[in-house]
Picture 1 (cartoon, one colour):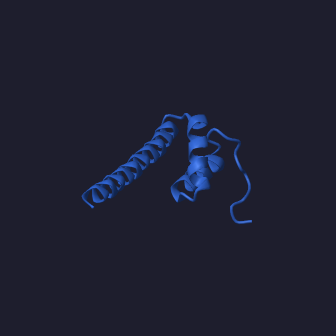
Picture 2 (cartoon, one colour):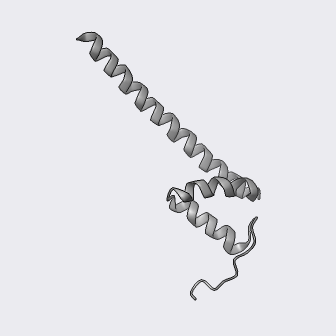
Picture 3 (cartoon, helix red, strand yellow):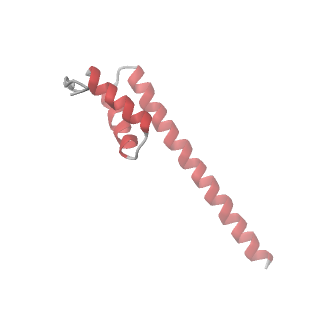
Amino acid sequence: MKRKLAMVTAATVLLVDGITVVKILVLSTFDSAILAMKEGCYEIARPELEWFAMFGDVSAQLLLGDMYAFGWGVSRDRRDRYG
């Protein structure tokens, strides 16, 4: 019984640590995209932001919208926002 409890505890700790590592990697990727934008390296930032935007990240969607609205590293979308 103790062995089974120890195995379940170890598996839980590994799962939680694994999720934490994934969160750290994802956040560092988003931060690197922001840093790339600040440095003017839009060709590096865009694919990373597109990945986050595809999964519903509102901040990434907003930044991509700004990139297209102002023509930062992409062709500018000149359509009127309200029509």
